Length: 103
Image (tube, rainbow, N blue to C red; front, side, top):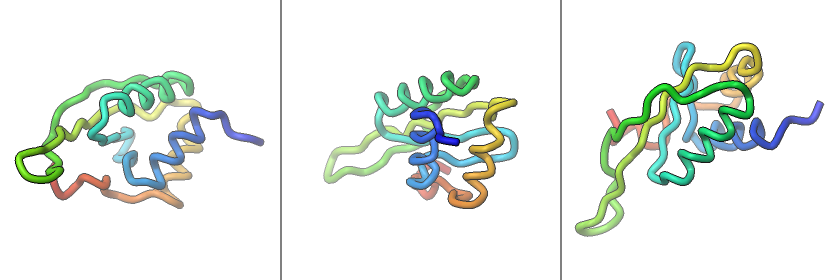
């Protein structure tokens, strides 16, 4: 069965370590507000929603320049999110790509 475009994008973020699963939550980290909005739309398409968004650190991008790391927390939607959790378990990581900075 083919996956929806929203689910496919969530899988891309799992492989790129922007999206991880922690207990019954999805944790999404990015430095791009537009990407955070795309994450919210993808999550809503599969029946979920974002609970919290917070700035958790700064990503250095050269001298005198840094971007805020944004962390969104969302509950894994049930039903519908189980396939993504299984996908994360086989192809994902336990840490996001910004985990060293965002602790």
